Length: 340
Ligand SMILES: Nc1nc2c(ncn2[C@@H]2O[C@H](COP(=O)(O)OP(=O)(O)OP(=O)(O)O)[C@@H](O)[C@H]2O)c(=O)[nH]1
Image (tube, rainbow, N blue to C red; front, top):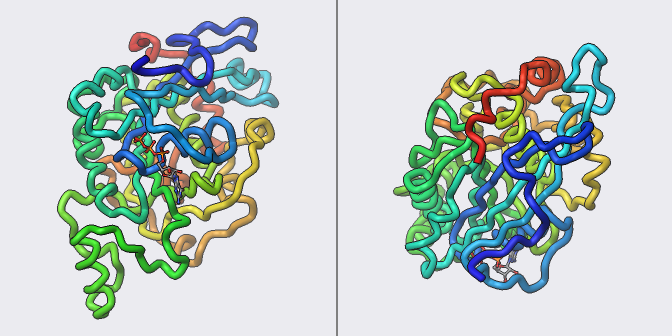
């Protein structure tokens, strides 16, 4: 079988709700990146809440389904939509990074709502290769609820960049050998003290936005809350927003220091689902921002599109609790005309 559904059944394009409890709709998220960076391990972690010891190499594409609720159980009675927590499915399309599927994998790039780019923190080449992935998806894919402005390679949907295998990088920040000549040169230059930061060395085809999330899928560590928020943002855009053409809140330029703290997270989906969208929730479990994260002025640049998640993005995005009623009170939309 060229691809398999590993997690359940999708509800289709949406609107299948029955008395507020049935599935309401689905969003589709592509998970792409070079072979071996840990996509399947990460998807397994997102779906099951645990690591997988020996993931099989993906054949073509594997589709997993994550159940998410969206809405407020304690919503105001003046607001019909926010009174109900609705059920959604997030389809995670884990596309094989192996070269043998290059010619045909674009068949999986259909009606995409968002993209998760994964690279291996110890293999710099896998990061620079994300450009190629972005171009491939942008040029050959079809999209649902596209953005007004394009991201890397012209990608017209929100995206998230996850640097996996953080466990392979020494805590002091020095890099492990990647086997790449560019990395070797970078390490040499850094040792000479010629660069203030390793990220300053220009790389051809460097992927936009050096920040993003870090994970160690093998050790079951990732920023679960941020990933769930990404999914919820996609749900909001797909089903509850009329503002596709507006400047996107996730187009703000992230800062270098916006990588989120790693935590070992237990699978507490249900308790998380009951949380509100307050900005405080984003300050993960009492972790306060670094001094440099508190006082900076908002980044000025609104384009091109940048990864959806950074602390900056959370400060300005529309998930904050004051904006939620607006979102939820907007009529159901317009988005259904682009159903799969
Ligand atoms: N050290 C370490 N190894 C990891 C981590 N995540 C995944 N791996 C290992 O990396 C290898 C490849 O992982 P996969 O999840 O199959 O990678 P993939 O990106 O899905 O690969 P393809 O299916 O070929 O596209 C496996 O041996 C994993 O156990 C991690 O966080 N740290």
